[in-house]
Length: 240
Length: 54
Image (tube, rainbow over all chains, first blue to last red; front, side, top):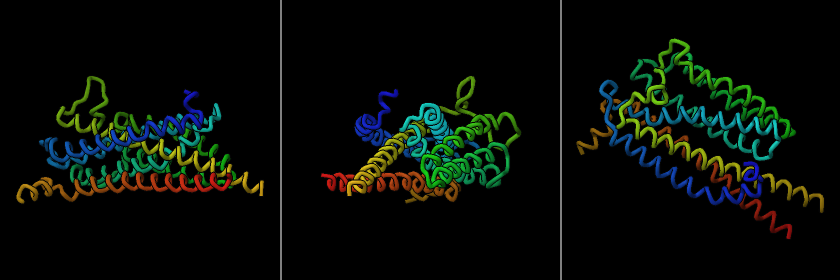
């Protein structure tokens, strides 16, 4: 894996992988949206409001998945000081914040007609709100130092400490009495939702995952180009 | 037209369903546009800096 993580090699293979990821992501999200709006049935209790699920659930999964990616990258950065690891964590943060915001707002839009409230301070909702603030705090912390390497290190430590929130989010619906329903897809004994709803959901989730991979690779390439640019400018200012 | 009206009404949940999908377009589209614009900008800056070096 470290062989592929050499910055020059990364620039080569990511350039080849990007169009495929981007194309597959666009296709899956388009098909997923079409299935979600036109093909999937209305719920016998929730009616058409259930269609919010096809945005809410994939973005909720991504909110945690992106944070896990960020925490692993931060651990690699702290332990092996690999140059690409910090770049990956920092490139992932705004994407994770976006998915978390989407999860919170669509959850609110689903909660009002189904639970009769936009928001409750229960364990699941509050722990996801904390996740959103962890993303924002990470972004602010990384950019808060004059010396970028100090910001990077502080950010990596925050990302790792914040990872304790991930199991809290996952198990909040089992540990506490919450308004939020427990897991219905990834559970022992298999999913409890109908196949006609499960397929659009999984297609949308795969589309969201590839969307994240596409933008992660693109943003990492942007950061590597910026680093090269700084080095070039430094050379030029020394030569002048 | 009746079929379209019925579709847009979302069984009475239009004011919850459409903002949810609309926000998804805004958030994901915004991230996509910001990422691509910054990428292209760095590409141009780097090309200009490398030209200067030669």
